[in-house]
Image (cartoon, rainbow, N blue to C red; front, side, top):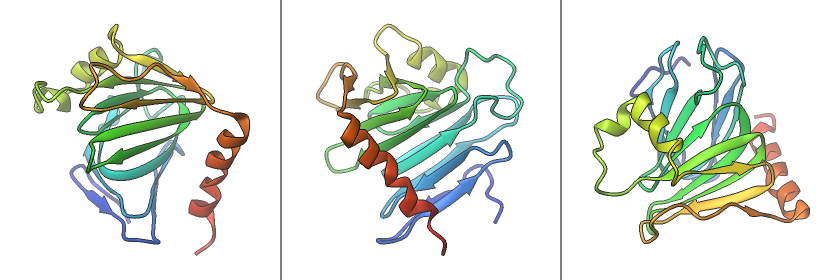
Amino acid sequence: MWLNEGATVKTAARSFAKLLFLDKSQINVGPRSQMVISKFPKKKAGIITLLKGELRAKVSKNYMQIKDKEKSKLFIKTKSAALGVRGTDFQVLYNVRNRITSLVTFEGRVAMAKISEAMNRRQLQNQNALEKLVSSKTAVIVKRGEFSGASPHQKRVTIPVKISPAQLETLKSSEKIYNSPT
């Protein structure tokens, strides 16, 4: 099924959705999750809003027709964080109850910055504003094997922390659940 900008993807318990993009990038929406395809132009970064739950994404380095290789190819937003993705494999979780966003990067690098409640929601629909946010001095780069998080009670996202190789492999292998035949 083809999804357009503005489409909402919502999963139930023990279910998931897999989105495939023209450039072979993919997003797996985990159980009890909800996301919106906020913007998805061909020549600018897409914007995905994670309303609750988890996403596992593999984003191609040469995403669509974006020419500037130094800029984010995809943005993922929650109420507490913005992520700028340039080509990587990662998992992001957003807990709607405590408004905490958690990020684990399996391959590549993801820029992460805190979204404060004072920020203009309309401005956060703009790719240039999101790029400025994830490139700011308060943003962090979460590399392979690292974890970071954002909470409404913190001034900025946490400094990335290396997780154990065994834990990383366990989390990474959870992808097999989403790729099993249906």
